[in-house]
Image 1 (cartoon, rainbow, N blue to C red):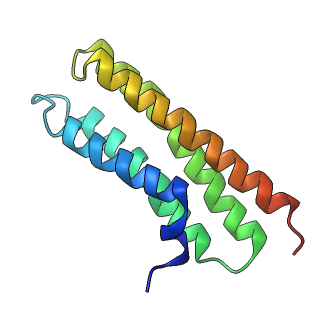
Image 2 (image 1 turned 45 degrees about the vertical axis):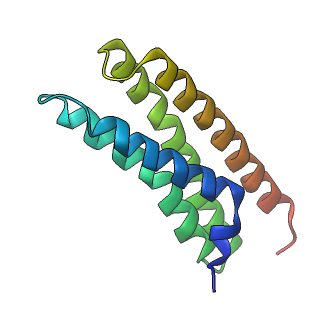
Length: 120
């Protein structure tokens, strides 16, 4: 039996992105552990906050975790930009990651707005 959050497209997209980020950051050279660690944590935080929020009973709790997930998606943007500027990821990877983050961010905003518009 699947957990309810596993059926969400935004969850699936965030897990896929986290996996690709983990692969990309595993190639970072020595001395960039701080950037790799922060990027991995922020990216994984998107999916984990979606999961945790989905397990909450009140609308306010769910909204809080979904909002944190959206913030984590935005946190990834400057981190991938720094990785690109340091040539740790390619221009193509940067564009793909950024595009995926934009989609995930929009989906999270839709999820939050939908939750706000629902009755208790």
